[in-house]
Length: 207
Image (cartoon, rainbow, N blue to C red; front, side, top):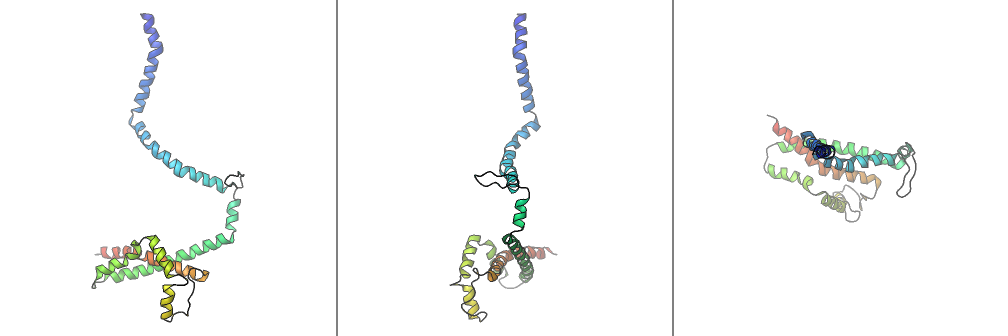
């Protein structure tokens, strides 16, 4: 009997004790909390950390899809910074951002002050002002693309009949000198209601 007891202690009890310690460790509150955040951490690593790390790796190498390359350091950055197309793109983005933000801010303040006054059909006009903002982007792009069309441009037709331009009118989206103007105009038209509503909300909150 004594031998059986010693054999049980030598074989079974250590395993039971280990299982008890593991269970006690798992039942602790902080360990349970760690278990709950593991799926979220795995998702973040898979969708954010890993792609970010691979982007850094590819930016410092000359690897192509299906053809392994080697480490080139900052050569890729030097190449793109010296590229004329990239430089023109940065310049266009800078000009677009500055002009669009200035126009939306100035016109937004002016429109907000106009809507702040008391006049007939104020609520109706406020709702109409929001239309460019609530119209789906895809629909706005299609509508403005048709209005700037080189053959059936409503913008050109209106400007010609008002005597502002000579027929047949410019190709707004096909000429470099006019494309920036057209894109800025559409961006201001779509973003103006947001700026106006923000300023109007501030004016209304003033005692």
